[in-house]
Image (tube, rainbow, N blue to C red; front, side, top):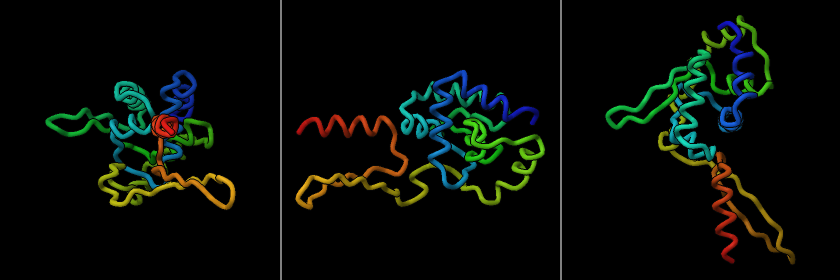
Length: 163
């Protein structure tokens, strides 16, 4: 557990891909999960699966989880050793944890963690509604998944450009 905080911050400072992934993880999760899927993280961040895997391999080297490559139809995934929300908060500098803090997290967090971040397993997709005033009391409304990505916004912009 030695220097997890320093190593995570250094990773984020040195890699734009790591910064992108960690900022997504910080905003994506309200609950902690035990497993995060590479394909889902890539889709939500606009990074390639290769870029996500590279960052997760470095995070594995730091010791915050284990990257499991998909075999025989299984999806490539990252199995967290610590709460993903705390890992992300520490990596972007929102929180500082010493070795004792990491040890405490490791002991307690699994009781509250969800099995995975797979959207199919959560049932209902939560949406965020954006309202745009058009004038004369009229509004245009747009709904996006709560965890929308930069790529999603670009697709909406392209769609709206057709009008």
